[in-house]
Structure formats: C-alpha cells, structure tokens
Image (cartoon, rainbow, N blue to C red):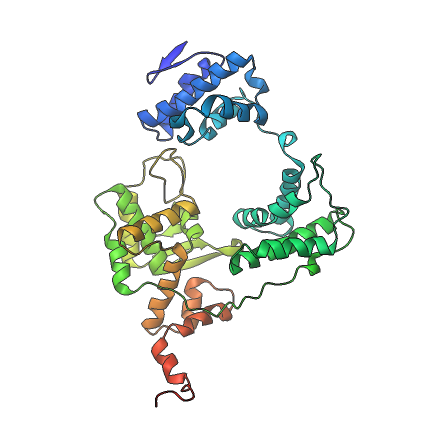
Length: 402
C-alpha cells in the first residue's frame, strides 16, 4: 500500500501511483486536483482487486462496469473530469490495453471507415469530418438490427427520404443543410465501397436556404469596447483573453484559426501572421500594433513557461495543453456575459470586424481578402450592413407616406 497526496492506493495499480502523480504535476494539475485524479486510480485499483480482474484484461465493458458499480455513488469523482487522464496514463505504460476496434459496434466501425475516407480521399479537415460523422450517425444507427448487424443491402430511396424528412423537422435550417450534405457524402461512400447497390446520393434533396437573406449581426463600437475592457490585464488569464478577443474582432479570424496559431506563425519583424484557414490553406494577415502588443504581453507574462507545445494560447486549468476551438468559444462567451452582452459567439466577432471595415469605407474586395473568402459572393452579404445607403436605393412602399 502506497500513499501520496494523502491518498492510499492498494491493489494491482499501486505501483503506478507515484508516476501518475508526477505526470499530473508536470501537466499543471494543482495538488487538490491531482489528489482527485489519484483517488480515481485508487478506486479503480481496489475494484480490480475485488473483482479479480487483471489490469491487462481491462477493456471498455470493464470500464463501463467500474463507472456504474464503483463511481456512480461518488459524486465528487463523477464530476472531476472522468477517467480520460488516468486511462491515457495506464495505456501509455501498457498496464491497460489500448482500446481496439473489436470493442466497437458495427455502427462505429463503419463510421471509422467513413472518417478515413473523408480525411484521405476527400481531403477534409479532422474537425469537418467529425461534424459530418455526428450528422450521419443517427442514420447509420437506424440501419442497425437487433443482432447488431447493419442492414445496408436493403436500403431503398424511400428509407433515405423518410429519414431526411423526420430528421430535418427537428433541426434548424443551417443544421439541416449540413445534415443533407453529410448524408449525400455518406451515401456516395457506401456506393463506392460496394455496401449499397445503387447510388442514392441524388435522392437527398437540398434544404431551402438562402445564404444572403439575413444581415450580419456585428457588435457596435461601444459593445466592443465593453467586451475588451472586461478583461483584467493584471492577470495571466485576462491577458490571454484580451489577445484572443483582439485577434477575433480586429482581424476577423475564425476560432479554429486562433486555436491553431503557433509561435512560429508570428513574424514580428514583418508584422504579419501566418494563418491556417479552411481547406489547409495558409495565408498572411497584417498584425496591427495593438493586437501585436496584446499578444506579446501574454507571451511575456501569461503563457506558461516550457508548456511542451508551440501553440500560442494555452489552457489555464490542468491538464496544461493548447486551447481548442471550443475553448476559444468559451473565452468569448464568458467575456460577453461579463460585458452584459449575453452570449456572443466568435463568428459574430468576425462579422464585427467586417462591418467595422465597411463603416470606415473599405471596399468589399479588401474585406473579402481579410476574411479570406473564396468567392466574392460570400462577401456581398456585408453590402447590406450600410442601411443608410440601402434606404437611398429602396423604392417607396405603395400607399406609404411621401
């Protein structure tokens, strides 16, 4: 029996406790948070000993049993972030086997093959592939029989249409549009792989959706000021959030582009950023002085020293790692709530950057270049932002006031 951080660990995993603590400290866990993770190891070790299970035989069914039988009554451990760090450590040591495809259902096995097709054959990014898979998972699941096998050979056009009609009714239009696009892609994949006899992609009709029907919802100047002033520049967290917000609202960067930004992407001498955008494209953006100063302030006094990654923006809480696109969204949402603006998304700050340029007289071509739009049509939506000029072009309503 070994004790560390006030936690006693017995059973077959006791020998792993010291190394696990060292890893937790290395990735930035504070003592209390590390102790919670160590208690998970202690619970798992005692459960394995009690059930007579060798660590080498632990797979997904055993992990689910452990969650239900041992962790379910312990609320403090259930909300501590799950077993991901612990299982990653044990699998890295080879104590617990890496999850293999044999534990996956036929639905998930097919989706794994589809993901490889999207990445290798279609050239999609990992994030886009994940979005496609989330959209088509209900359709694939609907073809699973009681014995777990997939009924794809008997797939008929009416089956596809029935699913589309039912699924679109519960989705907003943008989500429905993505779903039918992903479903067409899946059906093409199934036909190419010989899993269905007929090409059924053309059966899926398009969702009625007019891209330029609305107005971009940018923030007003006073709202932007409140958003930025809500960041406490005296703290590392505040310096990081301010730099992120400025990149979004001044350069119109996407949340994924900010999350993927690396130290070598900043050319301080030229005052430029290398931005990896959609379709694996890499483009240069100017780095305004106020944005550069904010990023430099965070790098000098905010970013953890020697974090083990070249990513610019890091998580504040353990485990110490690069921020994800979801983390960038959380930064914006938290800042907007502090400023009393409700929930503002990163994409709305992208609209704000474009709208501000238009108000200052920038032509649409330059706005499209900054936002890195592939076609001019995408940028034309901002032509509707200047309502005063639109009023000059609008015809009087018949019977209205002169």
